[in-house]
Length: 145
Image (cartoon, one colour):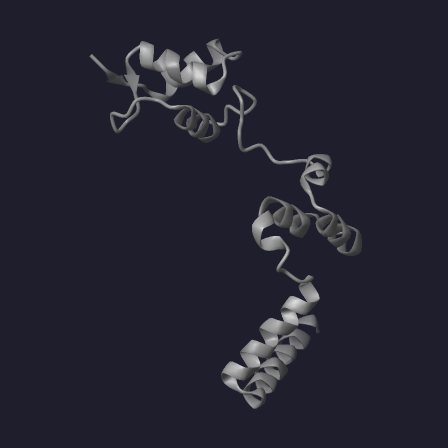
């Protein structure tokens, strides 16, 4: 008979089998007739998600660990490396490398913001845009005082 595994049992078993990968641990849980709370059999992804939720980091093979700068540089194209040298913005560089298919169409942040502002001006009108920006600046200046 299959039983839902409790939090304590999961943590105890996972700590006992630290050297197992997520796939191997899922197979162990299947063999022991443990299921998730919805009655589903364990998979590698369920084991990883549960380990993260229970803060059992460092166990098994994490597929969602963050990439380092060196790893990103290995994956990056020449244009992406040039972008990083120009801007020195790690988060934007990381997004561009990991979303490679859209990267080549994108422009640097400054040009992008001009494009967004122009689109917004066309939508509400230049007069309304200037009055809104003036009001925004007044509130910022009043907070600084």
